[in-house]
Amino acid sequence: MPTRPYVIDQMITAKAIAARIEALCREIEAEFSDTKKLVVVGLLRGSFVFIADLVRELDLPVEVDFLEASSYGNEMKTSREVRILKDLRGEIANRDVLVVEDIIDTGHTMTHVTHLLESRHPARLKTIALLDKPSRREVEFRADWTGFEIPDEFVVGYGIDFAQRNRNLPFIGKVRFTDEDSPATHE
Ligand code: 5GP
Ligand code: MG
Ligand code: MG
Image (tube, rainbow, N blue to C red; front, side, top):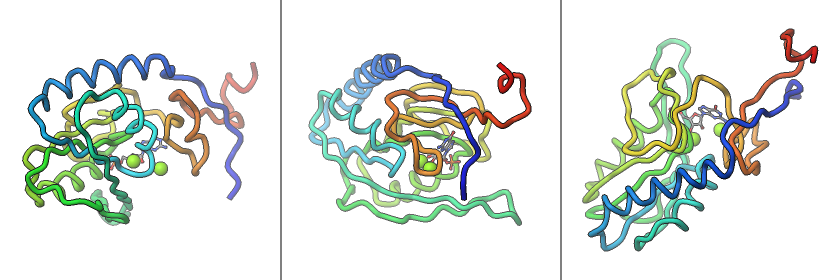
């Protein structure tokens, strides 16, 4: 299906993201200063750029693993079904784990994923999200670390897609449709 024409307005620069990741990594290092190994779990696909920058900035012994979840809305209920499309390769029992997500929106995905991983009895399980849209929450969830709180806008870039496009942008931008009857289209 063809998408409507749109432009991307820069919202968070690559420089601002890098600076925030440095600060977050110092906090994560303090939290896990005594770890023998930290298993950094990226949620595919949106977190792939974030996790790459995060692990290169982290001065800790890390292992990287991935998990892919998909959430489907159910028109009959406000709940959402979260399915695991690809599970971890490694065991996490008695390990220190950091779950890395791109965006927390309704909260369903991270609630489901953290419950699943907690059931495997990690030594410690912490969570980090690059972006958080607290105004969209349907189930209460708070990440241990958040890069940026953002308003209810559809964002792309830095790993995050719109219909699989724009993941390769180095910054976070918001999608603005140019066929909307708004003053912006008449500039
Ligand atoms: P939720 O917290 O609602 O379960 O799901 C969060 C997921 O919804 C994110 O990981 C992301 O895949 C998707 N999502 C939420 N907001 C946006 C957005 O602004 N842009 C894109 N591309 N995906 C989003
Ligand atoms: Mg995601
Ligand atoms: Mg997506």
